[in-house]
Image 1: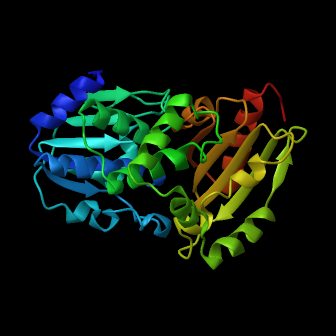
Image 2: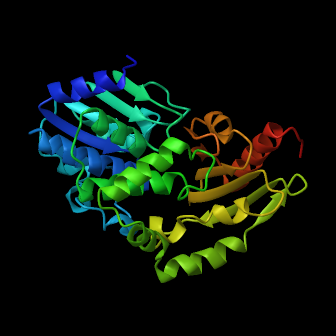
Image 3: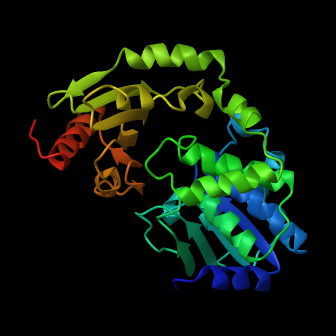
Length: 316
């Protein structure tokens, strides 16, 4: 059932024991939104556990409360509500979906959301799910401390490219201004985001060697042969290199997890790549989306690049 923000607040108030989760391969928005909402729910006297079917990337370990996020096998409470943040379909939460059947509340901002939950609030005009969480707390007249503010600022800033992407609105800037007044130090958050491990630089050099251009330079693709040494920190942001090439309309990053599976990320300047991802069972934003594609490396690359070319009106 589609709900208003007021109804969402009521559902949360009526729940006593809550598991809060977000999508696998967590980013700043999913983690910041989860941590900010968690603090609010705890202040309301709720029994809450944060769960993600994945590791928390090192770059986000500075976020207050991040060490309290557990994986599905470590859930210790029996929830009467599962809150899913920043995920557009049920598959995106991985093994968390296997917990005992309870009502699901989904709060999200992806235009490709499949309305999978029992209750959902989806605002595709929001720059980040963190923006929605802040709207919720403001509606409830919550006194936002510096820890909540840091989490929500990180959520918002990272998902709009630190206010550079097309999803940035006047409301987004207003949210940021409010959170700064609550104690956020933007330069500290930026330093955490910009500091990368040495392997990230090494990975960047390797990935740039795989760069390929298609359809008169309108499509650019890079490939990653995933290894156990890879982390979210070492591969984060690599797709921005092909995206920033002059003349490129669609950037694609193939991450080959094994011989027959690829995670595919899309970025664009003017094309709706969420529609492209949706054709392969994925989703996301208009300018940033992703999916998982089964097949050999050559098969995956051929059909994905062909679909991308068709999207921008060309043929390979």
